Length: 229
Ligand code: NI
Ligand code: MN
Image (cartoon, rainbow, N blue to C red; front, side, top):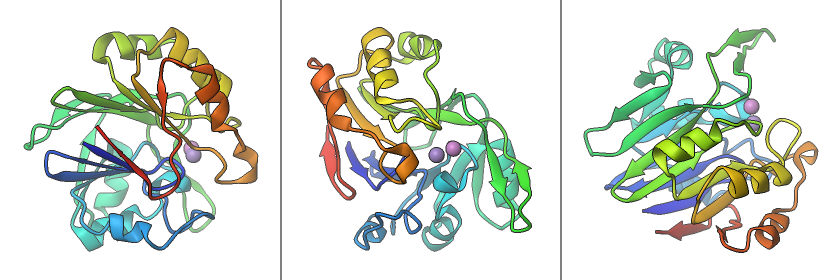
């Protein structure tokens, strides 16, 4: 399994000969680098955690260009299906894909809407996180969320060994919240911080995480970097 960081909350996961991209906010990212586009040319699935533009990002263009299926909640899938995109809708629950990859949609505490061209917000279902499991690896992508107590339940039920956690604060968990979650709720071997330093309001220092969680492997990835498990 290979996890490539594509900036903000976007990751590409190569597993079981499939490429899954989560929250492809790529070209509008202020730290965009051209080489990341190469990473998302051949993809099979796009997972969306909620409707905000820094998560839906380039989904429509990428799905059209690659033929990837978008997995998201019912409301976002309805909106995308009407645009001719191939979608697989899910609510909080699990689906096992043909290739054996298990995808579980999990709660996140956040809002979800799509900003329309006329400036109105379209209701876009519940914000979520995802658990992606294959063989003995399971990844928890928390999406945009604050810290919440049911993260302990997520750990008890699914035991994710890799955590992708937001740390930028203001709209999501802070570094302090991520440390609390790792010390009290989760038993991750590896944590990759996300959703920080993209814009000035979500400035955070991921090294604090590294210095505080001595028994967890904290991978601070630059855009385009990957780790293999
Ligand atoms: Ni959001
Ligand atoms: Mn966000």
